[in-house]
Amino acid sequence: MTHGVNIDPSKRIAIGSDHAGFRYKEAIKRHLTALGYWVLDAGTYDAESTDYPKWIRPVAEAVARGEVDRGIVLGGSGNGEAMVANRVKGVRCALAWNVESARLGREHNDANCLSIGERMMTEREALQVVEVFLNTPFEGGRHVRRIQMIDE
Image (tube, rainbow, N blue to C red):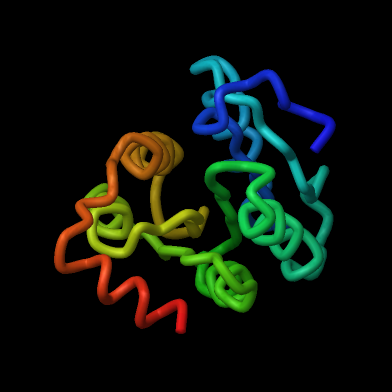
């Protein structure tokens, strides 16, 4: 990895969206940068209609390779984006529709990727979901066995 090498590994985030998640992607990127995160923007870079796998898979692959600590993917609903990310071995992408679902995705599932639907929540709610996702630790305990079963 050539970018972000001198950044605390827990402060390296990859983000990507299709056209339907572009506006929130940009807002989240600005927010994270202001909080001191190094953000790898995998695209898309405008609101023109595009196919989401093209922009989501690179985020998931960066997470799987360990280039970033976490990934954030966005679309209209977040469903397709979560599906693409979860096809990459080593990625556990949680689709969050509120703060509680983001918290549980981290606590119980050790999610290393977050999927958000721009059409499903306000921008303010999306920023809150991201912060909870990034600041919630994995609970461990009984959940470790379940994570191992997912990864088998």
